Image (tube, rainbow, N blue to C red; front, top):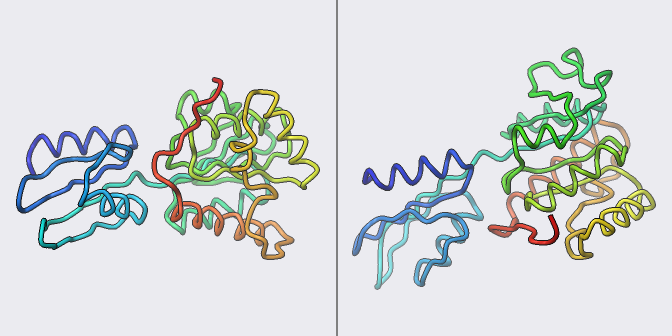
Length: 234
């Protein structure tokens, strides 16, 4: 690997931007960031690498080489230190996600309830200012409190988080989308929020709901479209 390629990959890693190192045996190597334009015959290969997170070897009449992919570690930001969150943090970490829990209600956000988890008792606005959301973060809103959840959901929509989900009934979500629409979000943007949250597996207790949520997050991660972001009102 050339020094300039290594420097570019390290810069992408610090910014939590996905990148590939395209090595063409008939030409040279170059670093491509997710969202960069890429010509044929490499466009489909690079997109597949970004989608799968797996490196690819290629060999054709026109080119041969490797696409080595470097993806940021996927994260889950959980809004609400509730019973579901206690189960979800454990399961998500086993599945390889970095997890943080955010809840300004200090009676809930305690070390006794969330040992060995990145825990913030700040409001989401302050938590995101210190550690911003990105496209490799899933946002899971579980407080059922609009004063806490709404800001987090709006921030996730603006960022283009690969998954956005919110706890609540259809009636609760209808009221939620009305509030967010009043803030300028389109119907298309609001349709990306998974609510009621989680896959429909008949979950009834906190552990089962956590399984349903995590399954839906994993599904979204592996089917995401590259470089999604919202460009509406800020």
